[in-house]
Length: 220
Length: 190
Image (cartoon, rainbow over the protein chains, first blue to last red):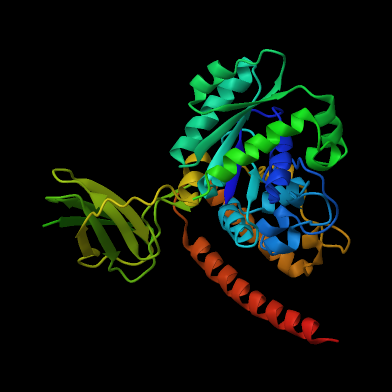
């Protein structure tokens, strides 16, 4: 099953959500942000290499950390050589070997944001309560609708004590999972670990467990 | 029954073919094949052929009471008829949904422009492409420059592009076969 994490605006926490969701689903996360890699990585073939035809997707998946990752490359030359039209096939090939594939999509509305939605079975939208983020998320919602990636949940990130979950749910037509501002989450992400290993008993982890349950419930 | 009218116009060794489809009584999927002695150069958007087009023709849907005009180019000289309807079947309405090529065509390729990327080094220890022999890397750079120039002008490809595509595909086939053989040799070592 392929889940695309979308959001339109940069910096709202898509990668954090993608990483933790993949951890809860025991799946693989693909860092699909071709212009700016977000997730931890090391030397070895990466998504730029895969999309340039230099490596098979399975060769590029790192399984030595707490979450399996297909990292993105970090060079402009690599981003240029990457053939975006190979991305859908890459995602589908990974899905043959992993029960759950979570694709971290980039911000914006270019093909690198759209192709994961085409390949995906469902999508999770990530936004913060700020107007600019919500406006971008609405555009991403509309793109997901056009590309048939049903919206499972909206992850409303960095909320305070009274998150506007009802208003946001009405705006997007999907249930909202609020993710509070959290030092635990920030520390875990900074150390390259998911909450499921860094803080398994934390209350914030429960939000990601809930998100994973919602995704799993959509499996046909 | 679906009808096809065609016109051709030749200039500078390129034939432009116009197709006009009409007279469907129900929504009909129509396949038109090029009959001229050369490849179809389809209309493209961001380098990707427009939906329904391929190397030999176009598949499109014609609604009743509507007329559909399409066009393509080819390096072949004009003859009569330049194209023909190969098939016309009532639509079964089983849409497949958008394809990745549609997304690229409508949203655009996010790759950084050529200007911001330094030329690939050909010394070992450079980028991954630094492994390639200088002659080959230079040829690939020249092909890429031609493709970029053609797609930035957003027009159908010319004679160079057809030859480039042919050579790239030959190179790709041969490289893949040799890589498989190299891997087999490597895997068979104790």
